[in-house]
Length: 219
Image (cartoon, rainbow, N blue to C red):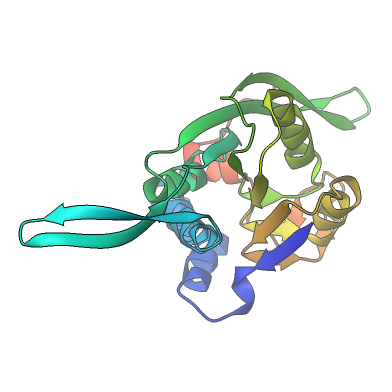
């Protein structure tokens, strides 16, 4: 698995990361969602450079021009609910893409331990398609890995791009260990060192789903 960290270079991407992390700015949920969407657009643009193109002729008001266009649109997949703004940014770039949605959650037992459970998945045929699976936070890596393996029940992608904004070193190691395929690329914008006992990234930014859409009932 190849890993690309866009945050190591100076770009406007890091301005958006700063605002996502900032405990005062992130109180504005609309801005939080917009920043995730902007980051999704940046990821989409960078991924687009690696896709396959063909030359096509287009008729303009003054003549005919040759332009390179995508041979095939990718399939965009995300994990509900936190992944929706990031997904929207990717969809802004690949606006003709097919889409897939996965409902996954942390299923806790009485001693506080949890496992990732998937309740719902919708997906087109993935055979020979480029799959882009996004989730804003890669903590343990379990959600991303489980979503990826379940998506493969719908076909074998030509290449898979896993997109996350903030990843822990533990989560990256988990994916590298469990996804040895060479046709998988992990894209990140920032890598953090630690996880809390409840598997939240430190320094991270908090719960991306709650910050984007409001707190949920934990009862």
